[in-house]
Each structure stands twice: as structure tokens, then as C-alpha cells.
Image 1: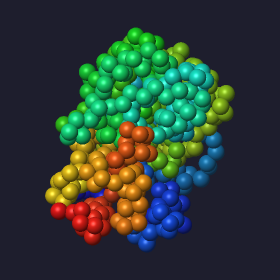
Image 2: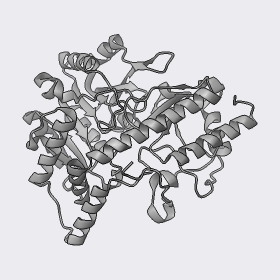
Image 3: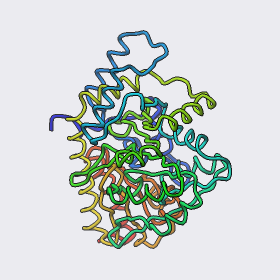
Image 4: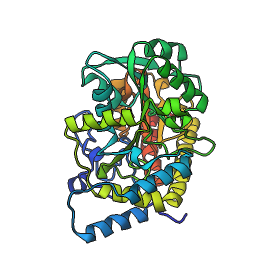
Length: 399
């Protein structure tokens, strides 16, 4: 490969302030030995693309770091990326700059709903959907996804329709986190038609939209047609794609003028005023020069997913590993071990020194599951799975 996805980088939290390393603790509050890497929170253990690093350095060298507004060049690069990679024609003025996707979710709730209104969420869900609902005094309307024996998730459309009748807003996660589903056009269109029928605003979190495995295709919700584009907010960022989460930037793309004006008015009421300058600079560099790096990254993620899948098939055949269609987050059914969620967490942290995302972090529908972040060097992944194997072997759990 042209780019380096194998070097293990020391992200010492005491020096770098790395968030997911700071929260690693066992059941007694002890931190693991140096060198243990968490396979949890959705950022990567890779350096970002060289073109991005070069652009950030150049901006820092410029030295004047005052207030920033999106440039015409940035908007054009974003539009071109969406057209080239997702066959979606975006107009430059549709792009609303925001500090991150999660605050944009809250802004959408404040814009399009009132306290007590219902918000439709598909579970297991990215926990910030529930947070943006409950923390603002709205009501969760759960549409639980249905998994078959291979761990493939689909929509219960009868239940979806019933919940949509009570909802004002639908949080669409596309690709779906934590299950890794890439929704088909038929699935998206059917969900959208129901939402349009009952006047439900669709807020699509498409932050993982570029991390699609070979054989699958991400379809931007708004690209389905004008009737869908006029009733949606599309939340995008390259923070997952190029490991830029610490730069805090998102492009919220809203095709309908009236919907966009309402969203922006609410931004003013919440004092969302400025974006920091390095985020857009990094994004533009990635949009213009990062495609080759991304293609290699996708192959690395594919190989790491297959490594996890084959590891469990060989040593723990009762574990169901959901096929990874999109994201770099592998969803695993650990219920075959017969442990409670609390006991599994203690086993993983105390005996395996393995820090994953517990399924219950994604709601009750995630009970018995674990989410594994495979965006890391292969050696890091192999070492983590070997710790799991050795601890399980001591308990007589391994084949």
C-alpha cells in the first residue's frame, strides 16, 4: 500500500488528551497497562491522510487565526465530492456549517419539534439520538430493528408506520450505527414515503457515508427525489472518514430553502455562531486530494473485519458477527456466553483488558452485544483478540 496503516501510534492521554483512552478503567477503577488500545469510541488509530496534515500545517504557518467563514472554494469541493462519490447534486448554498453533527441533531429537535413530541428512533441506536430526544423533553418512539440468525438487520415496517403516526421527527442513521447496515434504495424510499405521508421531518445522520464496503452503495436520502429532499436535513462530515473528529466541523446540507431558514434561525437562538478554521481547511484538502487514501483505508477495514469474523468462527462459533456493510464498527452477538451485560463488561475489562462498546450503550435492543472498532493497525487488533482468547481459555470458554 502507498499509505501507512500499520504504524502503532502512542496516543498517551496524559499528553494528547485522547478521550477514549482517558475513560479506560476496569471494574475497580484501575487503568490498564500502557500499550492497551481501546476498540471502542468511533475514531481511528491511524494518522489522517498526508494531504490533510499538509493543509493544516500550511494554515498554521499562515499565522492569522481569526474568525472563519466557509469559502466558495470549500463549498465547491464539498459539492464535487458528493457528486463524484454519491451521485448527489448539491448546491453550494445548501451547506450550513456546524461545529459537529451531534449539536446539529439537537438543533434539529429544537427547530422541528416541541416538548412532548414524539421522535422516531430505530434501535439499537446511536445513543445521541436518544439523548437529543430525552434531554430536550421529547418522547422516544422506538422502532426496533429485526435481526435474523446471521445478524442481518431489517426494518419492521408495520411498526415503523405505527410509530410514524405519532412522530414529528425521524432520526435516520445511514449507514446504521451500530449494526453497520447500508440501507438499500427500496428501504430508504419506503421509510421516506411513510414519513412524508404523516408529516415527519427526516434528520439523516450520514456521517459514515464514505465508509462503505465493496459490493454496497450508500444512497444519500435527499437524492431519492424532490419530495424527499424537501423534507429532510442531511448531516455529514469527514470526521469519521479521515479521522478529524477533534477538529469539530460538520456540513449540514439542507436542500429546501424554508427548512434551511428555520434551521438557521434556531442556530441563532442557540448562539451557534462560529466554526473553527482548521476543520474546513482539513475537509477541503480531503475532498480535493484524499480519495486515494480513502480507498486504501476501506481495504484495511475490510481486512480487519474479516480477521474478526474468522477469529470468532474458529474459536467461538457461537458468536454471531454481523456482516459489515458500512462504518468501521463490527457488531457482535455475545449472548452465547450466557453472561449478563454487567458480568460481560467485567470479564472484558478485568480479565481481557479489552475495552469495547457495550451493547447496552445502544439501548435495550443491544443487550448481549458488543461493538468492536476495527479502524486500527492489524497488530493492535490481533493483540486485543488474543487477550480475549487467552482469558476465555482460562475459563474453558474457547475452542
